[in-house]
Amino acid sequence: MSSKFTELAVDCADPHALARFWCAVLDYEVQDEEDGVVSIVSPAVPEGKSRPGPVPPALTFARVPEGKTVKNRLHIDVNPTDREQDDEVRRLLDLGARHADVGQTGDESWVTLADPEGNEFCVLASRQP
Picture (cartoon, rainbow, N blue to C red):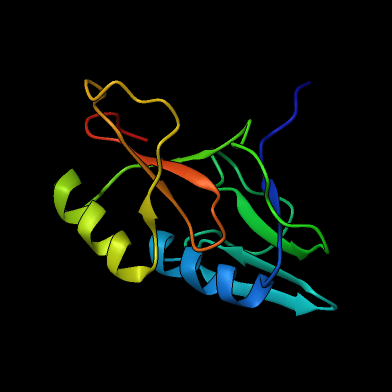
């Protein structure tokens, strides 16, 4: 028996705003909101415990008092599904992302961005999910 990766929890200052950003990035929708915690999921995943095959992970944003101070040790990678990488990067910048420098050399096939609260993530060019 093994475990499935089903959820990623993200500490943040404004769970509602960060959930809206990631819903727009991933085409997810809000599943639950209460007491400073907002969970978002893929609308393609049926409700219930019996889900065969891969399940896109939920993202849960929880309000915490402290801010982000250092580079993430874990980050999200996204793959454009209906546009080229450059077009997706422009779309994400328009949504509120910004370029992030985490020591890239300039030869990478990915683009490193940060969400509105500074959490780094990468936009991949050629890998398929």
